[in-house]
Length: 70
Ligand SMILES: [Zn+2]
Image 1: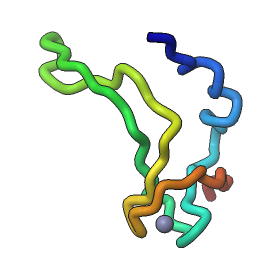
Image 2: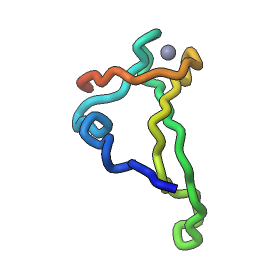
Image 3: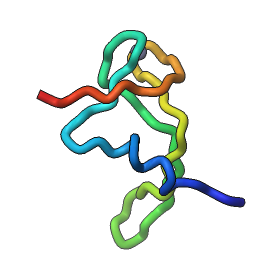
C-alpha cells in the first residue's frame, strides 16, 4: 500500500492560516485520519492524515479554503 502523505504538504500546511469551508465559511474543518495508541503518552496519536476534508458545521466533504488567521 503506497501512501503519498508528504506530497501534498505544499498546500496543506500554510503557516499562519486556517482551513475554512468554501460553502459556509466555518473554520470548523476536520480531516480524515488514522490514529494509533501510544502507551507512553496514554492517548491516541495521529499517524496518517488523508486528503479528505469535511466541514463539521455543514457536514459537507470539500477542499478547504486557506484563510489568514487574524
Ligand atoms: Zn461548511
